[in-house]
Amino acid sequence: MPRKAQYNVDSILSQAIDVFLEHGYHGAIMDEIIARTDFNRRGFYIEFGSKQTFLYIVLKHYQTTQLNKLMKHLESNHGLDSISAFFSDYVEHIKGKGCLLINCITELGFDDLKVQEIGRHYLDRLQIDFIGCLEKAQGLGQVHTHINIESTALQLTSYVQGFAVNAILAGDTDELQLATQALLGPLAIKQ
Image 1 (cartoon, one colour):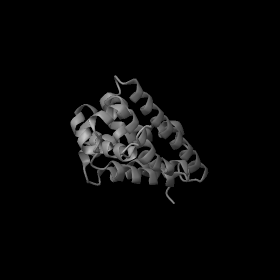
Image 2 (cartoon, helix red, strand yellow):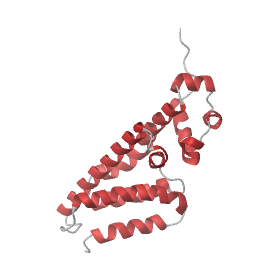
Image 3 (cartoon, rainbow, N blue to C red):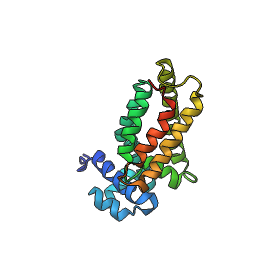
Image 4 (cartoon, rainbow, N blue to C red):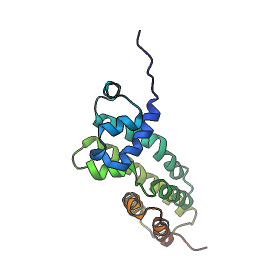
């Protein structure tokens, strides 16, 4: 009869997010991953197979437990209010550490097809959600009718990526909040 696992996979994956955020994929050594997750080396390889497979599972967990919560703002589709709420919470989420997914795309995206696929799917989803919110905002009279919705959504998606990288350097400053205001301000119709 197989023995029941003595560990909580979700807890291990959540702890691993911090390790990868602090060190990146290449800088996160197995000894630290094992030590910080309270996992044993043999059990790790039985459960996950390799560090690379583990990263993919951690990225999926990160999207499910953290990024999807932020995306709910956009998916509620309340126009410009949804976009503002998304950026406000996203800036808080990435402050001082960046975004694990964007960090992995930056570090591994040229060579790792799976990271490319995960990243492309996330960025496409972001852009589609921005398009929906901008269309709603135009319908509500919140944004100017002359803006090109698709290119504006692409610009917002690009800012998400840039914010994630800049958050590492900006630390706890208000730079990203100011940048969000500068980004969204010209879109809005003054009332």
